[in-house]
Image (cartoon, rainbow, N blue to C red; front, top):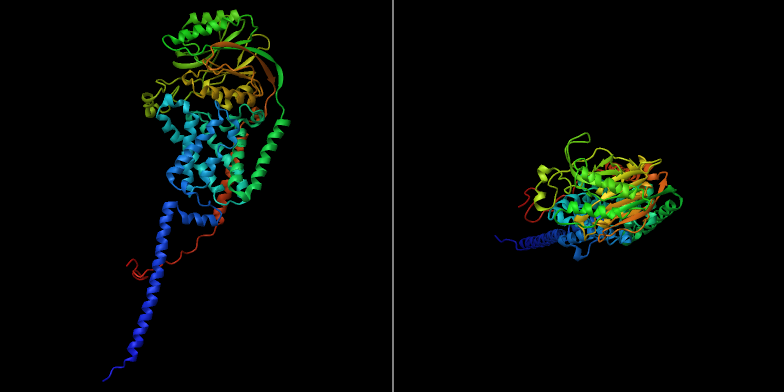
Length: 589
């Protein structure tokens, strides 16, 4: 029997065609697999590239960054450096104008982050750079511990970094960019508010404090405190960032800048200031650096010598710096008698500061206190203010049982100081005697303390300080500059008297009165200080910019929450692609 030869040839042709189609299909699948593998490599090497493209298409992310900033290590170093840049706006450099653009490099870097998580990391790293740069003068005292503190405090900038990325990343709409002008500054203000807690170091390095010698900014401080000035600085930084990086939203940025300028102008022109109500002649005694054996006694003697030189100058008050007396005057009647002699010689009361151990009595438990004490011709008058807010690690160690090891690596306090319980307004003798509001050391950094004293009737604010541990750093100038802000906020003149400089006096609008006493000076100076009556809007209404920022962030949370509820549920995913080595029935083979 013969077998037909045509059919097998046709069959063979069909099989060849099927094999060809199968080979082409296999090649297409392998090509897709290669593309997928390549995409995965690009995502690893360039930071979730595919996800960035999808978010960019939705207007939620940012365009690709330059290769130099694609490395996480380089981006991290850039974030630390960018976070440190605003420190140049504070004294001693006092490049106040830099504050309005100093955050722009940091914000540009954060908005270009590949993911929100990375933006939060770069916010944290920038916060570390900011804390170390602004507090660099603490390094001799804290050593390596300052890195630990900066890493912990820097965490507060993590959410802010994510906020910048979510609002300004990619190609945000003009409406979203306009919203960022209010939301980004509000987020930063919450960081400043949290840092202002005494246990976290107090309100040192607030961005608004860079404007201490700018008259329009000081006028803003009289309305909303340093908080309102910080909001202005952040709003300008945000507007500049939008101008640089989001061209299609420049109208919103320019509009925001105009609102800032018009608001500042309106406040400058129309907000009334307290009227003048007389003058006071106050002398500041600055003995200078006194080191070595028996330095406390020699410092007292030098202050005594300088005070005698003030006789016959028709003074109302003489102010000594912090820790100018090293013994409790009740335990050392000889020192009290010497101060009384000085008061009679100059014809005015002396406000000294006692840093000494006190026995248990009616004013509190036994321990070391820092106290402002008023001394008259007959000795101590009984007016005393005990410092309420202490410097972390410098005057006490928070959670000493856990962090007491800091005393072994730096100059942290070996024994915790004790604190007072209430503010005190002292009244000089005579009809209509001058009412004094004393503060000690870094209490001048707290806006609420000077505001409370002004509300209690203080006519003259006095801060007694000692920055001898930080000579040669930016700390003395920074500390003295805070008095200008407190004066402008409260509408009350302020005297900042130190042992070693910088000592300075400011009028009720924050303007400088007389010349400062630098860190090289050992002298006494007399200041003719204008007094003021009435109150500022900040004294009346308090920290309303903080509440406004909280309201902005609450509105953002409510809007995003409502949007997430309205968002439809995701549909079913696409079926997986099967290769020649697997099938729907036998996956993975």
